[in-house]
Structure formats: structure tokens, C-alpha cells
Length: 235
Image (tube, rainbow, N blue to C red; front, side, top):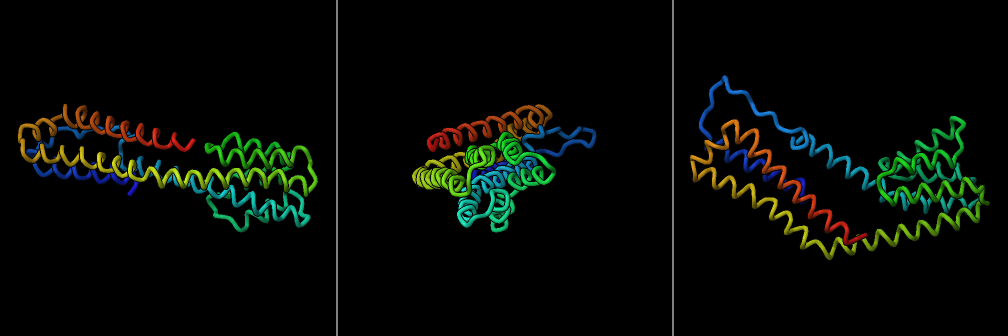
């Protein structure tokens, strides 16, 4: 269970508890305008985008390895990269395909790869694109380009193994973060069900527009800070 899933479940629990115990409101009362960053749809979009970037970064190692194998068979760099992309996950191909499309439009291959590297948000993907750009810019022979790309691929492979080991050792910490993310909304739901005065306060405009959004913002900020601390261990 991911943290965003835990937050979604916790928010759903709090919403059900609030809705079950809150007094009915008049039709003339306007609905609360929730911040866009706290809407479930926005959180889902951010989670999917992050998963897509993670798959793209993880696939960069396989792309470099396949490109290296094609270079050793005598293919030029652009053809070797095209061949490597045919066997790769579509999520990982996009930055490399953008560079190749720019190359097809008469842009220099090294400049197209560096432009794609500047847009990359993951250091692994950025390093893979920079390695290809270096081989293209220096116009290295196929054997030397393969050696350079192979060294970068070995480094990325080592980082992936190290990251997997760190994630395995910090799985208990992540489970505690998920538990705390579920505990706070569950406790809030319990208090709403047992204290009618609190339910009325949370159902008022002050609660729906200030208190509940502020509580959700603080909880999400705490979760993100915890995730950043755990993630920094791997760097």
C-alpha cells in the first residue's frame, strides 16, 4: 500500500464519519471550495505521473545496455538507439524518442539528447541521456562509444541494486508512515462520531473551509517530509 493510497483511504474514512454525524445543512449554504492540491483527482494524477517517471528512469539502464550491445555489433549510435527502444517499455522510450525525432528534423543528435536531459527530472535518466550525448558529440567510434555507455549502464545498475536494498531495509519505516497516515483520519472520525459538537463545528463553513483543509494539508506535508527523509537515505 502506497502512502497516497493510505491518504485517500484516511480521507474517505474521515469524510464518511463527518457525513454520517453532521447535521443537515440548509440548501442556501454554499459548498466549500477545496484547494486543488488536496482533491483526490489531483493526488491521483500526481501519483501516476510520478510512477511514470520512475518507470522511465528504471528503463534507462536497459536502454543503455541494449544500445551498447547494438554498438558492439557495428551499428551507428542513432540506429543502435532506435533498435534498443524497440524492446523497451513505452514509458521509458519517450525522452529518447523525442531526441530521435529532433534528430530526424536535422537537429544534431548530441544537442537533441542534451535538450532531453535538461527536461529530465530524474538523475538516472539525465545521466543516461548525457552519456549518449557525449558519445554523439565526440563522434566516438562504435567500440569506444560502447565502452563509455557500458560504464554508465554499470553505474546505473549499481544504483538500482543499492536503492532496492535500501528500500528493503526501510520497509518497516514506510509501514509506520502508512499506519500514522491512517491513524489520524480514523481518530478524527471517532471524535466526530462521539462528539456532536465537534461534528457541528466541522460541518460549519469554518470547519469545511479552514479546519478540515488545514488538517489535510498538515498531514500531507508531514507525509511528504517523512518520505523525503527516507528517500534521502538512498542518495
